[in-house]
Image 1 (tube, helix red, strand yellow):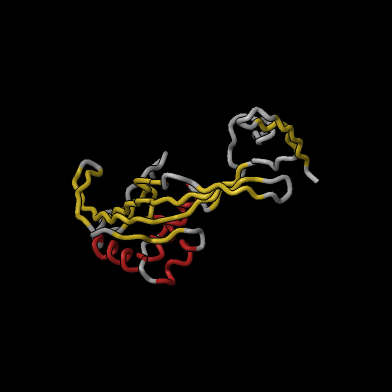
Image 2 (cartoon, rainbow, N blue to C red; image 1 turned 90 degrees about the vertical axis):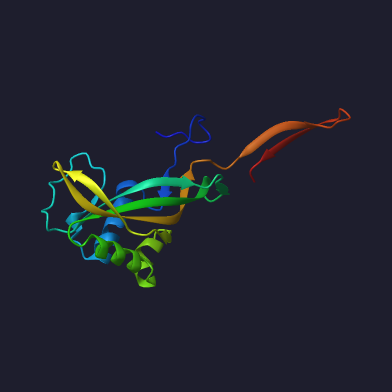
Length: 195
């Protein structure tokens, strides 16, 4: 069982919004596939424990990955007294994502993604989970070695902004007792209980 503010010890969030990790990668992969018309099975996370077989030379495909996740220096904490109480921690993050396009249509697919991301209708899925596009860099040609030969790839770097909210089990304070001591040495005891 996870700790709460009543048990002491480290607190782990009981929930997080928006989506993270695999669910976020799925959202990004679906967005890239939808805006470039590349089959979803050919839009792949850059790092996988068991990489799928390489597509054929004449296939257009994409490898993508989050290269940086930069959170703002401070988070906002807000206690919610409903029920037993909890604390919501909100932080804004900037994500740098790299999409590498392989195959004969690398430039057109990269520019298609870049331009498609700027259409408001295409933002709906991302905005629905608190993600907004900040910028897309220019498409850059690079080479990669796959299967012991050089192939061309086109890299497109994108920056997104999102807000995350984590819920921590910091419970309501039900009672407290202690005393205040003034500079003059006067001691005033107090007892506070929930009414």
